[in-house]
Length: 243
Ligand SMILES: [Zn+2]
Ligand SMILES: [Zn+2]
Image (cartoon, rainbow, N blue to C red; front, top):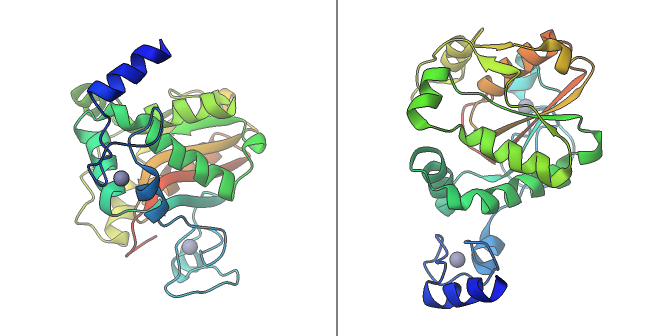
C-alpha cells in the first residue's frame, strides 16, 4: 500500500497550497518551509482569558480591556495561529469549498495549539461549535465537527457532536462589530443532553475566533448545562474588534 502511495505521489505530487511546490511532508499538503513561516502564539503576550495577542512584544500576563468589561463565559480561549495568508485561504476552502483533504493539516495546527496552551489529559470531552440544522444540510458537513472529531481521536478523548445545538439561525457576522455580534449570537445555543456534559471539562472547538461572541455563547450554554470547565480552541485568531 505504501508503495502505491509513493508511486501516486510521484505521478501526482501533492502541491503545497502555500507555495505551489510539491510538498516534502508525507501525507500532508503544507510544506515544511511554509509551516516554518506561520506565526504560532505561545503563552506569553496574549490575554490570559481570551488569548488576544497584544500588539508589540508584551511578555507579562495581562487581561485585555474587552475581557475586563465583559467577562467571557469560557474559562480560557486560545488559537494556534494568526488568521492570514495560506491559513486563511485553506480554512475558507475547508469550510465552504469542500477542501476536506486539508483536514489533517488543519488538525495538526489545532493539536499544536492544544499542546501549547492546554493539557489534553485534563479534557473529558471535545465539542464542536454547531451549525444550525438547515445550514448543515446545505453544506452537508460541519467543518468544526470534522476538526473536533479528528482531534478527539488523536488525543483519545470522547467526541460529542450532538449535545450542543444551535437553536436558531443567526445572521452572518462578517460586517458586525463586537457589540452587534454579541447581540446577534445571544441565546443561539442550547444543550440537548446536559447529563452528558455535567461536571465535565469541555474542549470547545471551532476553526476561527473573531470577537469570541460565538464561543462565549456556546460556553454559556455549556456552563448552564453543568460543565465544570470550558476551554475554547481554534486554529486561528482574527485580530481587531473582540468581545
Ligand atoms: Zn509551501
Ligand atoms: Zn481578553
